[in-house]
Length: 451
Image (tube, rainbow, N blue to C red; front, side, top):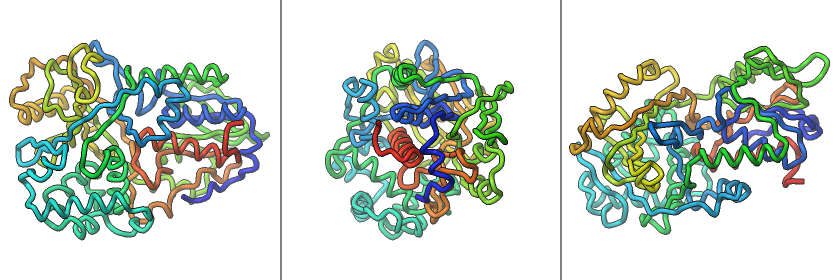
């Protein structure tokens, strides 16, 4: 990662800190700063905390707006949950993985099922297994940044597996952006999921906190309040700028201005470029050049379960969503009143026309597809349907990405930008977000531990 830049001396000496953004990143930053004795204020434009991790109502159920899971290897997240006195509540569950290809649903949850997987021949399966094993053992991820992901996968898995398995999955997550994506992307994906298994292609065990992130965020809010952190909900920031007389002003959409010694801006890089006044042209261009994928994600509450797989990967291009996440395959159905919670995500670039489609249009399109995939499902089984739209979710790790990561500290003394663009050797998830917050606070305050 590039150096922090800016004026670290000012950041280290700053007493009053403002944090723009009340997602998991902003809240963890606030928590870490408060532990180091700083006076912290958080500004969040929504009426609730959490950002991508926020919860919402789906019929009679309150649960996460997007799907989340905790891996046993997520040490940073588990550490934070421990500080919130929630780690002991984690429930660990063995899950199964599905694969929908050629109009059929297959289970690929263990080595035996993998060997029986019909779409690939024996040689293809061996090469695919070797690819996963090899990726899980790579430590020098930076060397992969110079290799296009499709080229690397073709070399290790072969052309048939690339066409049948990898390319549909890459397009589902990255769209045509996969052509500019480095092999570090697939390494990061495999490395995290591989760590969830006890060994090789054996069983998966994932965890969740009962109550979901609504419970986590409620507890985090209580801890922040006890630490003296002020949280302003419904206060979207309109402008962040240095005052002529000193200090950094956060101007809210209602015209209110709050002054701090230092401010951390956490929204996505293109949004941060618009928020911060006085950036140098090169800084602004660097932020605007970060290429993002967004998401349109439907949440469904159903009367009945589907295939019983936590994740079903999809390779058929007629399906309008990029995967099926059956949350009730992980979470006790009692959390949903005995019903089934399903997420149907579609990853798209920020300007995609899907963002402009109405909930009714998306519901009709998605439901027609899910009924075709699961013939026993009837429209009367649907209890609730809701759509979340987020244009900036994660940066695409393009070739040589780590050399172009925007610095955390800007040329404006006291103004810092920390966001998902700084996750350069991993995939966006809550664990990586918590890790990023810890690294950023250590760098900006010059303190390696609380106190």
